[in-house]
Amino acid sequence: MHWITDNWIEVFGAVTGIIFVFLEIRQNLWLWPVGIVTSAVYIWVFFKGKLYADMSLQGYYLVISVLGWYWWLKGAGRRVQGNGLKVRRINTRLALALLIVFIILFFVMYLLLSRFTDSPVPAADSFVTSLSIIATWMLARKIYEHWYLWIVVNSVSCVLFFSRDLYATVLLYALYCIMSFAGLKVWKRSF
Picture 1 (spheres, rainbow, N blue to C red):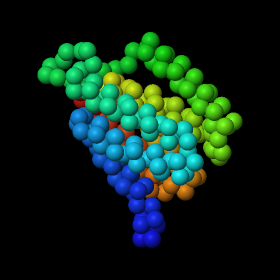
Picture 2: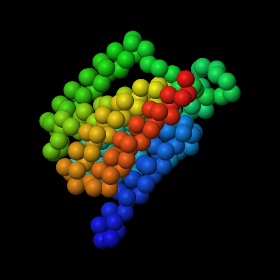
Picture 3: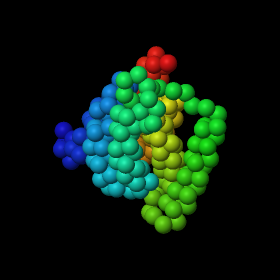
């Protein structure tokens, strides 16, 4: 109980994070405002844990949450039945472009973290952050394959956060991993 009171903000962030993924699986528009709250909390949590790339990622999440909210609501220039985006598959050209972006992001972050911060895990932090940026953009565009990226991110994150003694966050990301498999199944029905 003492650990919970000492780490209440991390626990709160974990709870809002679970709500976020539950809403994501259901393709509920309210995932975006919940994501804004979760990101704001985790900026602080990751700063305290010296996970600077993950901390910066939360700032990105704040911005992409606003865009995702808009795109999901308005359809991002695509008129579909009613309003909003429909789930779609990624094409080869976009997948290659996102792979290139991932590689560039990873190396830039790794160089910055390893040379200019006291991060004890620059490679893992850069990997998780770079892949999360790609996965979140894909989520905002309702691209089905983002779930595969989340499975990788969440698995690696469990190990990373355990190494930084962020135990509530480890549980959160383990649950995220399980929920990612559920997301794959539920979103597949949308085709």
